[in-house]
Each structure stands twice: as structure tokens, then as C-alpha cells.
Length: 357
Image 1 (tube, rainbow, N blue to C red):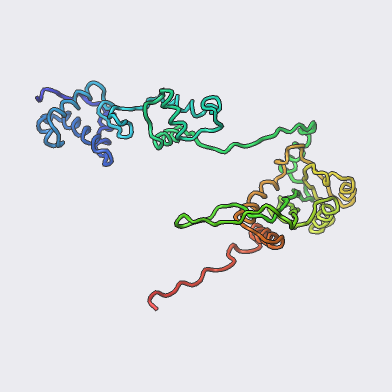
Image 2: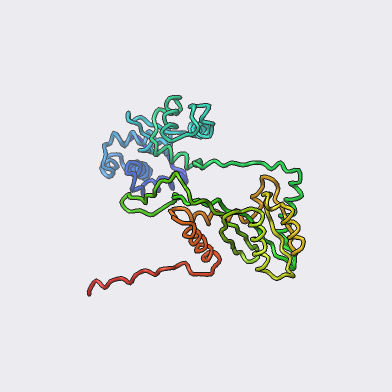
């Protein structure tokens, strides 16, 4: 019975067996590692069976597996076992095939526009890639290979024949602002409807905030005319009923009045009709203002665009404003905090009651 011996261990195998021995979450691996370590230490198989709380026959089986296959022959993976008890290890080639499937267009494979974990699992089993796999293990496997679910995005290439010239002019303006001048980014945000807007909320017990559904909006829309000062990192603006040429020209006069007359304003705009009107151009030449137009379909060059996302998130989302005045108040409240003109706290927490009282 004691003639089965474990072969000599390498330094790497000894270190790995000692790690397996300390696996509290996998007592099977811990027992197998103890058996091999005791056998290499010269302990008899009968005594090993008594110390490891198993039969001598099982000690011989473990030693035979170790001598033939190494540590992999005695390692047990509970999440790799199917309902029949047979080992279901996913080796590198199987994992690569799973990743290849999930990165393939689902329209060509399943006739649908996107994958889900249950559909991916069903497809892998139907195609014989795996015999069985749990959804949780499939999620863990994909995450280990850095496969993530991400939202798709749209992108439109600019066909402007003067794209390079306009792009370089704006990038040069951002990188080296002219001395004695101020770089201003201008754009409109809207139209602003009076409608319930979805958002995120904290909940306890699964009950979420409900908003009304609206179909007839009879109070009209508003537009938020805004400008972003790159030097001070401030966002300013006001709400108007329209955004026609007179309204936009009135807004530019308001912006011009906030800076000294001798300071030249370099204003970055998109190609909206009111921005390129002759009336606005004449006013700009008379008032020490130079306009820079973004290329067609390239408004992402205007740095004010990235500030409208937080404005929508913190001032409009998760709200149901019933009047334009209420909506405008919410926008300006966010701008006051964003421009560091007020503290975040509006109403302090009530004082805690004394339990002993």
C-alpha cells in the first residue's frame, strides 16, 4: 500500500502546493495539496490517510494523478463541473472562440441586433462550442478578457472643404490664446420644453419616483443662449423666447458689455444661420469682435458643447417643471454653483434629536 510515492517537487510546484493548502474556500484542493506535501516529506500513505481524513486508496489515486499530470491533475474547479459531474474546463482555444463569437455581428449569427448573456449562452450550446455554462460564469469569463457592454455612438464626418483651415485656427486659439484678447465659446441650448424628464434617483425598497406623461405642450419653448469663458472657466447665459438674428445680436451685445471695450473678443461659433448673418458680421467688425466658425458637422470643436451635458443632468433631468420661470430658476441655480458663486448647500440638515431627552 505504501509503495506509491510522490515524485520530487520543483520549487515552483512546492510554492503552489503550499498556496493550495491554505485555500479555505476550496477544501478539496487544500486536502490534495496536503497529501502530496506529506508524501514528499516521507510520511507513510496510511498515516497520510489518517491525517487528511480520507481513505488510503484515495491517497494513492491523488499521488498517481500528481505523478502523471502534475498540479493540474489534482486541482478541482467546482465552477467547471456540469450536472453530470464531468470536468468542463474551458481552455484557451475555447475561451478565444467564445470571445470571437461575442465580438461578431449578432445580425449575421442570430438575426438580432445585439447580444444578451442568455442568448449568447444558448448560441454557444447550440453550436457545440460548450456543452454547458452558467450565465454568471460566462459574464465572469468575458470580464476577464476585458469584453464589456458599451453603448454605440453616432459619428458624422465633416465634408467642409475648409475643414483643415478652420480646425487649425480654432486649435491654435485654444493652445495659444492671443494676448490682450479673450476666447469665448458661444452656442444655444434647447429648445427647452415644459415636460417631465427622466433621470436617476436613490430609492429604498424598490419604489421609484413617478412623473406624469405629457402629449400636449401648449406653453411654447425657450432657448438658453450661453457663452463659455475659457480663461476663467465660467459658463454664463440667459433664456429667451426666440433665437433669431435680433435675439442673438442682443445676446452678443450683452456679452460685449461684460468685457472692456479695448479687449478683443475671439468668439467661436457654429454655422447656424443667425451666426453668419450680415447684420451680426457688421456689428462684430464695429465692436472689436472676431468670429471663428467651426467646420460643418464639427460642432465638437466648440468647447461649450461638453458643458451642456452636466447642465442637462443636474438642472433638467429628473424634474417636472410646470413653468418656464421655474425651469429658468433651476438652470441659473446650477450655473451659480458651477461658477463658484454659491456653496453647494442650500438648506442645512435639521439638527439631530437627542435620544436621551
